[in-house]
Length: 235
Image 1 (cartoon, rainbow, N blue to C red):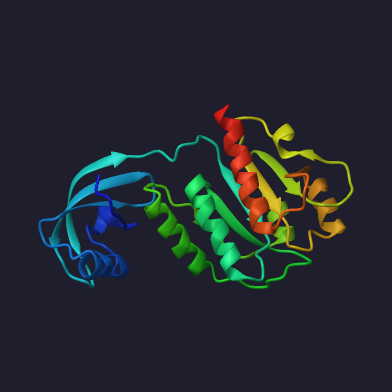
Image 2: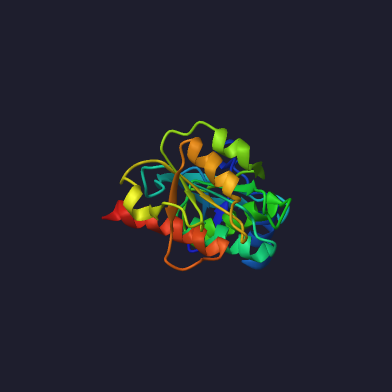
């Protein structure tokens, strides 16, 4: 596989690279017609290709071979988190979560949320970049900002957890999660979930957990949760 990975979600149908990828191919990497390159569709496949039209607006390729690349885990891992006020911290979490491995990222709007809106397009770009950088073929889904009540009322076939800092009964995530199970974890804002939100989540079937003995920043808590699930499944 080539060192540089390109992303085209419609590569099988169109045999072309999107404009941004085409510009990188031609203007940055100076690739020419006849050069070999690897493209992923973000759905679990690598495609070994030959560049047949080097156009910075739209590169055309010929697919020579396809290689299936499973995502690396057989469970569904979702994190719903309240975005922080500083966008770069949200971007940091998405980047690292993609590198480590995650299926879905869901920004949620809570009572104490610092950020009332978020441009998921930017997070999607970060996810694509992280996927390519880490040489993966699976692109996680970045959902639109969702209300807290909407997320806890969704049906989900798996374990559901809410991490909070209140002095209420809860145990470490690692003691509650069962290996191989799908999992959805809720992470609150810097001011935590409201106590009412915690109670509503528990009533909806979420189990209260802690992620550390110390208080973690939102993005740190999110990554700690992702890593904990993967470590348990690797044992």
